[in-house]
Image 1 (cartoon, rainbow, N blue to C red):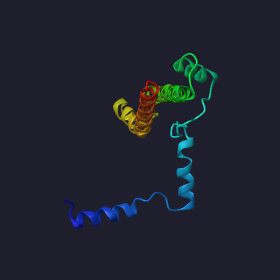
Image 2: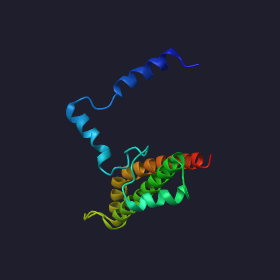
Image 3: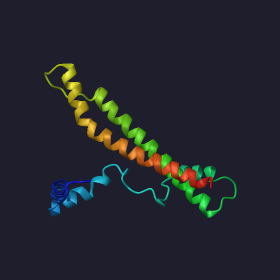
Image 4: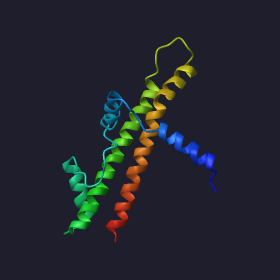
Length: 145
C-alpha cells in the first residue's frame, strides 16, 4: 500500500514535470522529432521510396489482400527505419572514433569527452530502434494470422 506522503510527493513531482512552459520552449521541443525523423509515427506511414514499396509487395506475397498489404507496408517501413537508425549509429560511432576535439588533454580524456557528448543521442537511437523492432514484430504476427 502506498503511503499518503508518497502519493502527495508523486503529485508534487508530476506538477513540476509538465514539459516546457514558455512559447519558445514549446516551439523548440516541437521541433525535436524533425532533427532526424525517427520519432515520426510508423502507423500507416507511406513508404518513402520505390524500394520500400517493392519490399512491402515482396513481403505480402502474390495477390495480397488489403490487410496483408497494410501489414507488409508497416514491416517494410519499420525495416527501412531500422536501416536508417543503423546508419545514424554508425555515424555517431565514427564521430567517437575519428571526431575527437583538438584539446591539449590526453587521448583518454578526449575520447571520454566525445563519448559523453554522443551518449544521449546513442540512447535516443536505442529507444527508436526498440520501437521499430516492436512495431515490425507486431506487424509480422498480424501478417501471419
